[in-house]
Length: 403
Ligand code: CTP
Image 1 (cartoon, rainbow, N blue to C red):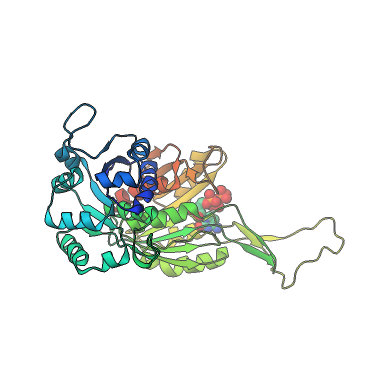
Image 2: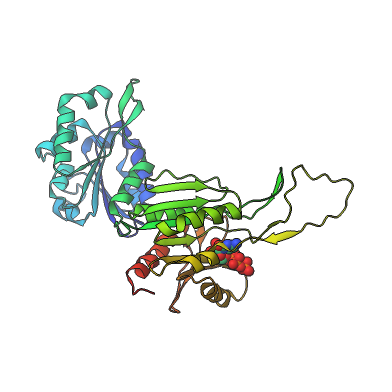
């Protein structure tokens, strides 16, 4: 989500600076360009070498480079950034920010920055509670800067209370949200995820290797872009806490089908990412089936209902319907056939012949086939990035001519 975004991090003198290397790493992993500015006292808590190694860029503290005397332009840095996050933000720096005191390089960069500014305070609880600090924070938020609230917990002083800098994973999440266009606002999306389990007896079921990752990544991406999401999921170990996602848990294909049909009319985007079982045992035994000396056993299975095909029949033309096709041979031909047969607008094809694609991997490699015959092949990517590509295609389909 952060590929090629320019993130400037300002580090000030606080013990919480030990969390910044992890934040830099997380941002770099997302493909962001990261630059770091430090106050002189921040050097007491984390070394510039650590941060320059992780960000693959020099770290700035002085207006003049001590090695060659060259001038570091605070204006250039301030203008380069898409987002400036000051983390940790000490009480001292908050006060300077609130009153425009430009007595170090970080402060001159802050005063030149044109981008959104976020700050993550870190200090002892009494310092945080102090009326001056609180007044400074209010002043900064009134200016339009964004407070990343500190957490309550054990502090370096040994005291317990508010003042602990937010964790890097959460700061990353705030940055992601801030830089994600809300281009799905007003859209109601229905996403299915995970496998289904078809019971045979009280202890056994038929299932598949789906982890639910692709469906959850789609739900997260849609919600992050402003959509209201209903996520109907089969059994999975995954969790989601993102506001905007309403999760409904089901177990069997029949339960999923029933729930999807109830939800269908209220949604304009429908994505069938679940790996629905095609067959379920014809008889569900009330008691555990015993071996009874049998060396062989035959089971009768009956076909489940094809949920996507049912959606294809009941759908309205203002809805965008997306199916998946997991194939092992004649991939494109089979996928195109599914798109026609199930009356979908888009089919996301993944081939089990592609390494890193399909079930239970953190990555996927897909071809997105549209109803008008266009095909887009994407390289191997993380499931989060694949979800972003799919939602981009859905966005295009929503804005396109009515089908
Ligand atoms: N699907 C569904 N209901 C089923 C089976 C599949 O809604 N009972 C949906 C899946 O969620 C997916 C699409 O249909 O979006 C294609 O699923 P896939 O398993 O690739 O194909 P099938 O239609 O089951 O056909 P086959 O197993 O013969 O390839």
